[in-house]
Length: 302
Image (cartoon, rainbow, N blue to C red; front, side, top):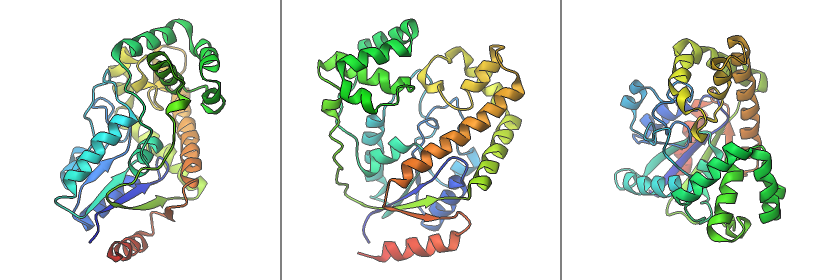
């Protein structure tokens, strides 16, 4: 049997967690998380991280391993996750990767460009400038230093803008010059399963999940991490809205409604991203038997 990575993807709230557990039990293997926020130990409720019971059912990797102040990049994730997979494949021919962070999924399946790691001094310099000058000024500078990347970057995403400027400052070259976007070869086969639901059903599930998170203590979790609210790790749906409530700017109901709305918007972005990938085989999560049969047949192939 060929070493095979089953990649289970789909938008937030679609039902990846439940199915990934049953797949892992079916193939007696482990789960690697591809969720950039479930890495943080203090963000359990708002990221819908696997529960202790679920982790007891199936071994999970890259869950709760970071502190909010830790710097972490998709490049680090690529290196560490591939090392973990190499170890797992020595025990089992099959492993499962699941999550909704598109860049993390691509980091494993396609590889990301070999962009230099940003040193601590440059990182602190750019974060201080962001806090003092704001995003608009940094965008203007990026337009001057790397006009090609400026044309394609999401100018409302501070993480992307700051990182591009960090590379410009540190290397004296444009961020674009490091972006080759060449697909890397992997020493294992990849089978991608995408989960989808009708839009109205998905949106209802997202709304219900937000209500469930609030009942489980999301507000208390947000209050606990509020002292770190300026960190990039907390520029996250579910927390940034509740921070507005904590600061007295929004009512609690308005903040909860905004979490639902922003979660739905994020789900649309995920769907758009995944639709670009012709390698994904799409199923409704209720088609569990069909998914198992499809995977079993694919795995048998040489």
